[in-house]
Amino acid sequence: MSELAKLKWRCRRGMKEMDILLTRYLEQAYEQASKVEQQAFQALLDMPDIDLYSYLIGQEKPTNRDTLALLEKIRQ
Picture 1: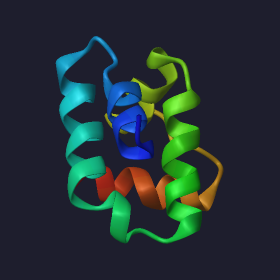
Picture 2: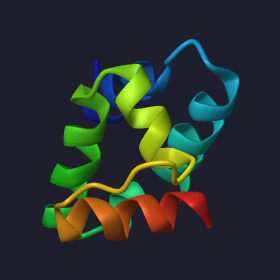
Picture 3: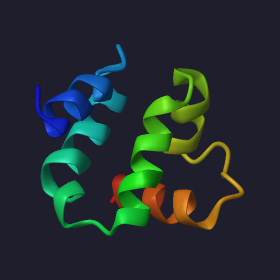
Picture 4: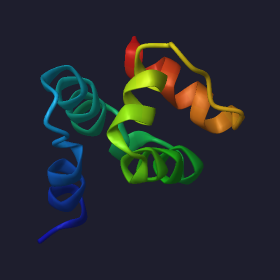
């Protein structure tokens, strides 16, 4: 299984809104992203759903600048 296929599988979170946002970023921006941004995306996928959802909707903000920039990009 390719890296992108594994990441796509990890984007499936059981909440349609999160699935759409994460998969759209993966398909449209991940391959062109810097290594730092790719690592930040992979770290997002390691988060529990409740924390990730809070970040994606802007209810909470991460302290890491790279993660914050990535979340803003994903929400656009």
